[in-house]
Amino acid sequence: METVQERIRKIFPDLTNQQKLAAKYILAEPKEVALHPAKVVGALSGTSETTIIRLSYALSYSGYSELQNEIRSSLLERVPQDKALKSFLNAAEEIRGRTDLITFSMEQDVAYIRQTLGELREEQLQQAVAKILAAKQIIVVGFRSSYSSAHWLTFNLNVIRGNARLYNGPIDDVNHLINQIDKEWLVIAFSFPRYISETILFAQAAKDKGATILGITDDELSPLGPIADQVLKVYAPSPIAIKGMASIFAMLNILVSGVVQADGEQIQKRIAEYEDSSRQIYPFVDSTDI
View 1 (cartoon, rainbow, N blue to C red):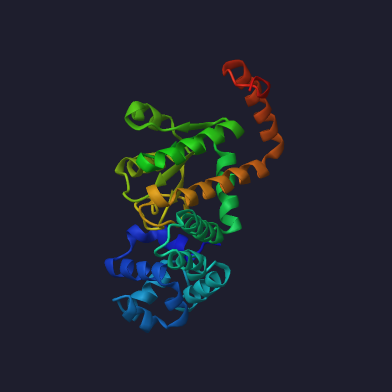
View 2 (cartoon, helix red, strand yellow):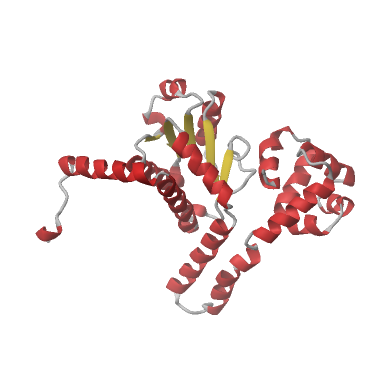
């Protein structure tokens, strides 16, 4: 069953301006929505009770009560942000005026990894894995600070699946590539602040051709969010290029592990073939040579 966040992400571009304000408030302050009636949420969001109720209908709920109950259930299942970040905040206070940078950095990374993976539901992971396994061809897109993540994911998907390609922007013939795409293709797109327009444009063009879009981003309502068929959300402080890589790679690691687990026998065969061909092409250093 789709979460409130997923429903908002999919229909956000079609909402009225007032409904968009209300939707952003619901995403930002789910605890307030869980505790208060529609009239209060309308006032807190700078809209109205009528807007909240109409938004509930637009999200395909029977009314505000059903939306509120859905949010209450999700809050019971998720790892609260204050707990996930508590260790980081405590560490920051403890090392104030000290030089224990290693401890501080480790606590920060652990806190955001816990938040990222703590809010990733098992069904979300399985849906993403199923998309990867079903794809005839996978295109991975990521520029600037996201390039390293995109390259790592492409490399590992080729080791275990062999059908992934990294999109290199102007280096590639984008017209030729787009014209090859059909409904059996999967595009995995990385988009973090500052959001690169080329990533969004490529994802939209691929979607128009029928491809499935798996977005890895920091917010359901990022420029990539409404385009994607599914979003895997990464929690990290800004700037993500400096502070968020641990969370991004934690997400990618569990995604690749999920693919391996789901198709273990074929992947073991694929890895064996990959190792055989690698020995023929690349001159590796053997342990006996050291």
